[in-house]
Length: 253
Image: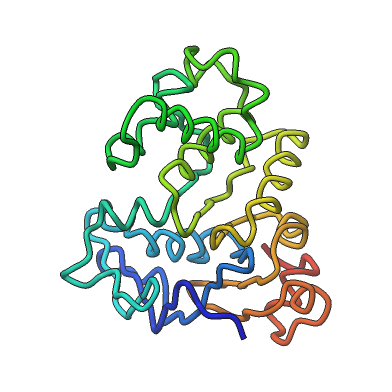
């Protein structure tokens, strides 16, 4: 049994009076890519955003239960949210590079977190992050150009480079390919496979084929509840819950 990087116990989320997530418990391990699937509005993105406290930014949102990162309560009074978000990076649905150069997009995090002693070290961090994101060869001669000048798929890989530049422990991906074409999507999926094991990766996806391709563990959500969680191959071929079976055979969703 692999040790959990993140443990969530009885996590519920409310937006004002409305309950969006109901008593979810799950373990996330570094060794696996974990996919969250389910129909729109089922709570999967809401749950994902609990892991780096992004729901804190939504007025009226509150989270109950307990979430630990390496045994530390991330909602505890001692937790520095800025540090938490450096440890738990996030890649959003639409690529959102800063309106800065490609270099500055990646250098921004290491600079504000004081990870580089000098320009040489910063250059090395930027090159490493872009290399890991599979983008270095495409942009190494144009680092001073704006990040927004890149194609959609390249912008999303730039956002992944930006997330990994601060050396996070966890990467959250909220439908990272939904705005991309099939070729760019395949590149992001290859990248997820390459990054697996280096970071705990959690991906929210509407695309069941994508979940099957990139993840080793899959959680199926429905109406704010975790219905089933297990090995991806098992969940897709031999689901235990009737609701899961109905979803993956296309009866609803």
